[in-house]
Image (cartoon, rainbow, N blue to C red; front, side, top):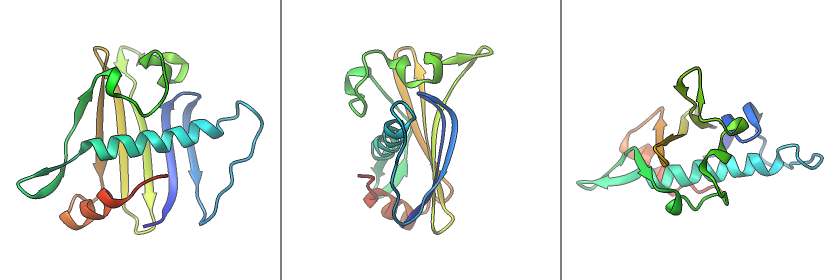
Length: 144
C-alpha cells in the first residue's frame, strides 16, 4: 500500500491542507511553514488508527474511543486545544473536528478524526473498505 494523498483539516496551523505524494518526498520550506505540522498530522493519524482498531471475536473492527490527555502521548502539548486551528475547538456553536484523511494507491481511503469531549479526546477512524482483509492490511500499516 502506497500513500498517494494526505488531507488535513482544523489541525494546528492548517484550516485545510491537501498534499499529493510521490514515491519519494522531501519537505522543504522556511521556519514555521508547516513541515513539522504535516508530519505530526501523519503521526496523529497513525495513533488514532492503532488505538481504534480492536479485535472482537477474532475479527478486526474499528471502534471510536475516548482518551484522557495523559494517555494522548502522540504529540507534545501542554493544553489539548493547542491541536486545533487558532486553538478553537468550537465554531458557530458546533464542534470543530480535526480530520486527517489518507488516500492509498488502491483508491481506498481512511480518515482519522479527533474531537474534544469534556477534556477527553474522542478519536475515531473511518475506512472506505472495512472488510476483514483490508482491516488486516491496515492494521499492519505503520507511518514512520
